Length: 471
Image: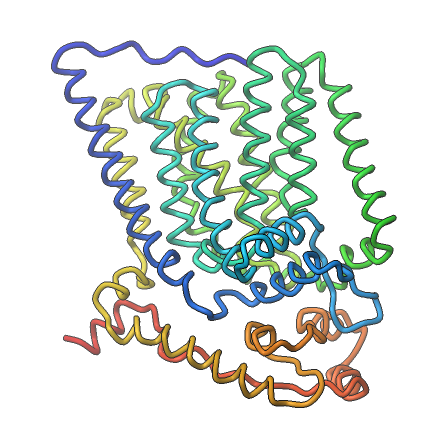
């Protein structure tokens, strides 16, 4: 793979106008990224449940750092269907720093988001050269993730850190391919990423497919070595944790209705997909178009397939957002090859591209950062939620025996062990392997009390409703 030749340099006033436009593009996207990041950054300081898996991850991070079993027995009421590396990394980091794993995981999530943006920048540079397009793709990625994935950005969840490791493998892969060197080290890093979080399949599949598509002399050897490393990792996990495989293959309901319920989420990356697709068709002979076509298509397919599973949320889209961050960058850089640019010019095409991406970012009634700035009630609702968590934790701590909390942050703060996983119990019912009466019986047999937590008080992110209340 080679870096494609950059467009012919501009001279005189044309170059000045191009530089001015680029500065404006970068300034606008930088502001959008910073604006939308303000909400998850501010929220991360509070002891509240951002997403139901936060305390779930926290419990297993505690277990890993404490040398306790990481994969519960299959006949228990708790399951762990994630690979082990993230639990050990966050658990030991929190233990070493003396900081609650919940907040360590949140910080790692934010760092990972920025790391992925850097990786997008580097990937675009390898594919098509130039800095402006690379920065555009990176900034769009940060903005769209901070805007649309607020339940993961700044939350204690391993997905973003896993994507950062996988993204590093992708950049390393591209660099080694460009240099004509073996991609095996990069593929092995992707294997490591898979044992951090297991649903990130688009990048390694793209890499292997590219090796065969480009008729690389390393294709067969690299595939065998990386595949063997993956199988060896699974074997080691099974040897260390006998319940690893049954936990990873936990009960889950699969249905078309689950896909239909999630498909609307694609409205957020749809515009970037359209922009990239238009360029990829017009520049289809280039290596950059061929590679990103593999990457985007595998990412979209993986997202849709995962959405057939019940309980799969926005993290199924993360591969797609990363791929489109690269796609936006290469499309911006090579926009002069498009049908539109040949009719209205590359400069006006880039104007339209940036304007459309910015409009899509702000075109929503859900505006947490705006409410954070203008609404005292919205800000105070987070403090109220935190007080509720602390008050309820005191109540749960006073309850005798084991307790199952709807908000697991409360039970964890109260020092109660993790004894009932609502996801596992819900999937038992949905898959027909149990009934609600069976679940109640299992909880009763283990003398597990239930605690119904207070809902989020006043955390309404609708800008329109706030405006109507405050004319």
